[in-house]
Image (tube, rainbow, N blue to C red; front, side):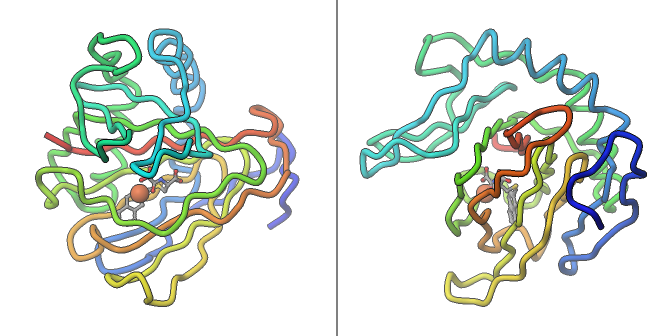
Length: 216
Ligand code: MD3
Ligand code: FE
């Protein structure tokens, strides 16, 4: 499919299986984009984007913030979920209805019922930014799936195995794609290759990823 998508180009559709309990729902978020972006602007007004520090003391290249009852934070003490934004001492902004509705619908389409995420990590990528291979295991209960929504510039997602050294599949993700991971695929290593500079018509030289989790 052509990369420099025009506004009137039909979005790719359909479901791509990544594993027994993981799939990409192509274009699933497109009908929600307007509501998602409006809600995102409100969230980022209350809890501005920042570059958190890794436990090693380096600033992360991805800028992030959170909404929902819990937010994922990183600093010199490590990674954890926190009910308050360390930058303000205030609770994170509430989970917008559009986020919760989309996550419930996407999880349902992937076969997970009753999904009620209490945390949404919002990642902002610029060209050249990457996310190295890691596992998401700071959540209390690994039975609930994770729902990820890609907006803006395309990215190549790395989907590995349960060991860091396992060969990772490369999965291109586009604006509007939603990925759902649960069950046996929940603890697989994953990451994002350095982003190419392929500005998106709506969001420019930026990729936004919403990662919804049941963390508490
Ligand atoms: C695969 N974010 O924030 S989405 C993260 O595009 C993160 O910003 C990426 O990995 C991004 O932690 C990828 C999501 C994702 C989340 C959890 C997973 C992929 C996963 C758990 C298991 C396998
Ligand atoms: Fe992750």
